[in-house]
Length: 564
Image 1 (cartoon, rainbow, N blue to C red):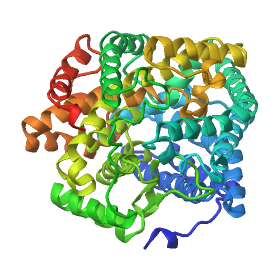
Image 2 (cartoon, rainbow, N blue to C red):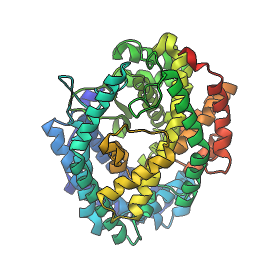
Image 3 (cartoon, rainbow, N blue to C red):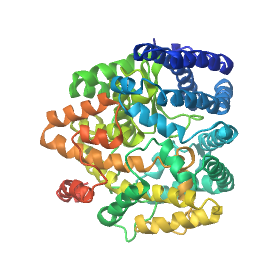
Image 4 (cartoon, helix red, strand yellow):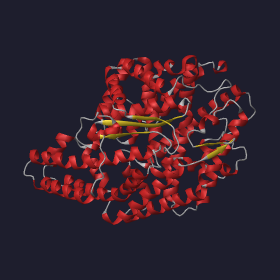
């Protein structure tokens, strides 16, 4: 079957609830571990059917946000996901109180029970309407960005298609394209701030109803974090601030000198070389064909995986009007189908997102044997290790995509990963500030963001752009709106991916075995357990960040970037 032929049927919540209740009663009345295990399988089939239809709807809606049918279906899920969460909440309670818990833990592992305990911390029936409102607000933000129109030099662009102009070889074009994009955000700042203000308030209300002081603890539980705390994250942010901010600032200074300009402005940051940034060779179809060749050589497993992605049409890669911005990978479990979504726009980011999302897809394909959705994916901190590491494991094949600009691409890719980390932890610290102070006004939130930029991005010069100078940049970051506390996961995973980069250079076979072992484990273990399983060092350890970037610093210092 191909993706287009996957049948979609809106779940009837009355029927879903009835089936769920029937199987839950069977589970609770089972007289042996074997009987409970069988009923668990039947119950999981009900859950899988619902999540399959949700993910089909999500993909088809984000592929065309103007499609009226899937817009209605998306609204239906916004309203009914909390009801399904209530059913899952009952299931988790039954699981945790099972008289055969020890036997079930031995069969399925402790992580399922840890995840159940975390889930119970995030829900009770009295927050149902608040969850529905939160979902609706998230949809409003996504639609606002997906339907953006950026007018520039007589043409209209969306937020993805304007990006190549932001990387123009002509500095004035870059500046004006950036200003045009940010004019869209400035013109809709009131709407975005209103959406976010309502989000913060409803999330704080949810936290208080659940018995917490603020949303931070709820946010961590939603992210299914079981083996590290906000204090540990704060210590990690300190390492990034002390060690990586100076390194990133040094890379920006090298860039300024390469470009031959007196001051690096915000519209210069992503334009890395005076000869232009590396661009992928070929059409989107040729890029996919080269990716197939790459994965056929990387390993037999990746060869089978990517052929499956092609044959079943499980990728929607090219930008178009009405398509939601960004990239993601999801999993349609009933059909054993990972799905990759992106917005190719002719920049090197096309290759980054393809290898990144392929890392996610390869992982979930590798762990699809698990019976529970909870084990198909690990927590997102671990999941991002797979994606970011895949970007590095594919380095030997980058000549297929960049030809003579391959060395330039590798320098930009590795240096850009270093430069991302200070921004990534700034986003996390911003969210802690927001949810610990839920009564902040929109202007106070903007001021808080601007203060963090000056700490973590001290090089940044907005060249008098009033919207950005007053702290509006964060409003483009979808994760802040739609996935609170997600963003630190990218930074933790990046430190782990750097370790895979180093290990791969030393001994590819050993590094790849560790990576595949990590992928096959799926979500059956916690973040730090998975890090240990992959023979990686915890990012939270004092000294870890310094030890990881030493080899990277040597590599970057050894590149003669003046020839680019």
